[in-house]
Length: 225
Image (tube, rainbow, N blue to C red; front, top):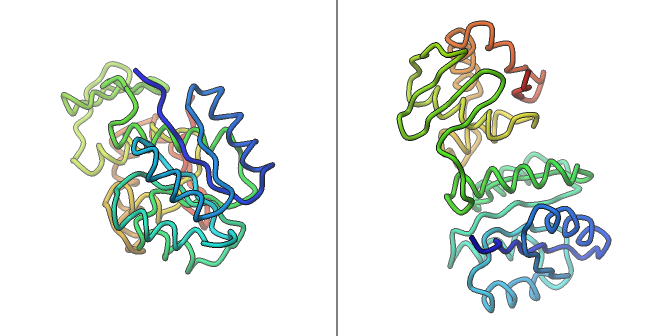
């Protein structure tokens, strides 16, 4: 399979180099832009960009403007990077159709993991229909879950929630991100929906339910045994 192209947009050359180096090591082709206008030029010229990593604060055209322009013409996955901590910014990002929202400073390894998870979900990255983690085996095709060889019956949303956790194992996931990706909410939904499903999922997973850790005040994280 051809290497997927990721467009990295940030006015800081040091930040672009950091992200580029990690993506190249993970076998991606990387395109770079130092401002929003250059980003749009490259995006429309290349035609086959698989994902955009997009900084918010940039000269000439900020990340929000770029996102609006891209979303008017394409559903390409977008990860927004920002140094700002205003919850309204995160809400705006999801309303504009952003797939992920990552705060600076961040771990490049975590960024690559999230890029790969998004590309798997959008069927751009070749992936095995079988997922496994700490004695848990998931067959997407059969919609089947085995825990230590024992079949576990999950509802559709419980199954999707478990898949999302496994795809993002080791990554702390906010309730908002879980709602956005599992329930496809474009706004901040009721956190109790997440908590209720996680409680049921943990119960059905038995001892393996302890792998789903609560991140107090934020959300959840799956830690592989």
